[in-house]
Image 1 (tube, rainbow, N blue to C red):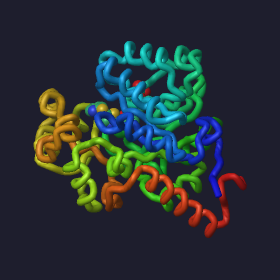
Image 2 (image 1 turned 45 degrees about the vertical axis):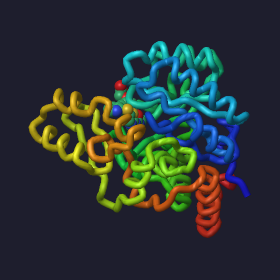
Image 3 (image 1 turned 135 degrees about the vertical axis):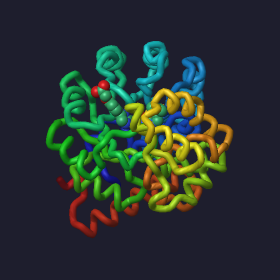
Length: 316
Ligand code: TUI
């Protein structure tokens, strides 16, 4: 059985699972593996230089014939150039994070690229719908990395009530039960980040995968609230140093200390002083598996739960 929703129709995929476009983490290999498994893979642009991202996109095209996308991290200073390049290369869809993508909506849409903004609030979601967004990704503060204030459980049903376009639930989703719960909230699909960090095809340093697997229920913390850009990470020496600066509202020093630390963790494997961005569901990730197995297991488990509860989304 398959779960067909407005999201699978929109993206042209088999399964309503989007892989989160995590900076320094979601490379062409991971995105292609997820797309090849019938989900929707995403390359995370983060602060990547434009030419390197272009190479990643081209690389992904050699690894899969299926649709995939790019996450545009809107805080990056060269974002205008990134958007122009993504339009030139052509991808099926972009997701956007850490800001308002309004400025780029018309040109992306004119190029035939679907736009799925990540919205941490109802107000932003409505604004995005009014300017032509194809779907909204509602990301709760259970998620890893840069987060909003609301939980997925509270944000998603409000988004479903507020907009007519499909809503994708993100933050706190790593298994089939959580996926079924997202459908119960009215979502048309889910975005999964942290669990895909532990995919075989994810090229982050093995030491970071080990930290995700080791993490228990209360092992993540939100740091950097004083900077206006709160970030959820697995606790380590760096997070404790940032917490101390947060208490003193030393936001400038936090920005300085945090600079380059995501790459330090993900690429170089420094789990002590690197930024271990990961969601609360790190506690539920217990093994390294092929991306295809993650997709298949989530789908089978979600279908089982939904069948038990008596409501598959296609029957709505
Ligand atoms: O973007 C993410 N997660 C990220 S981005 C990232 S790189 C980074 N590193 C350090 C500091 C900041 C970024 C790591 N993780 N998730 C999607 C997301 N978007 N979460 C929250 C938002 C968001 C916040 C405000 C989206 C829109 C927004 O709009 C504000 C406005 O202008 O209305």
